[in-house]
Image 1 (cartoon, rainbow, N blue to C red):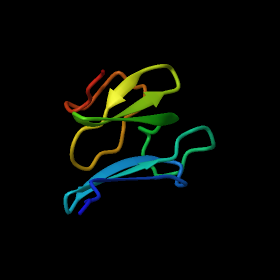
Image 2 (cartoon, rainbow, N blue to C red; image 1 turned 120 degrees about the vertical axis):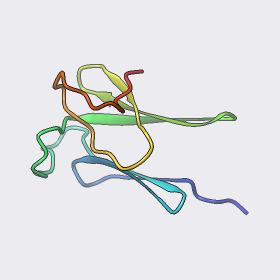
Image 3 (tube, rainbow, N blue to C red; image 1 turned 120 degrees about the horizontal axis):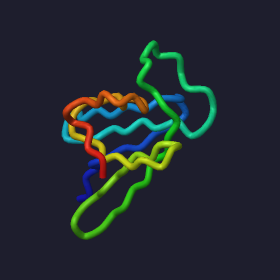
Image 4 (cartoon, one colour; image 1 turned 45 degrees about the vertical axis):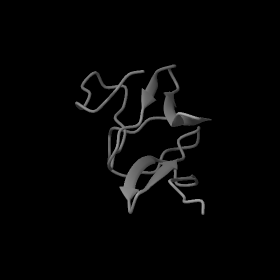
Length: 92
């Protein structure tokens, strides 16, 4: 039987990731409209690409200025263009 390992969803104008019960939930809604007023200064417009191969799933976040970022495991909210980056921030 097939098992769901990831769920991608949108509509909310923000970005977030949460791993729960063996499933990764990815919320992506930063494609161009005004971002959701979360109080988080670390939001930016983005889009997501997903590549599925025999080796697994590779999802990447693309910022409006051309930077590409990997998504780490666990619950995250992505930072802005600010030069200060959390330790998990992986520029690909």
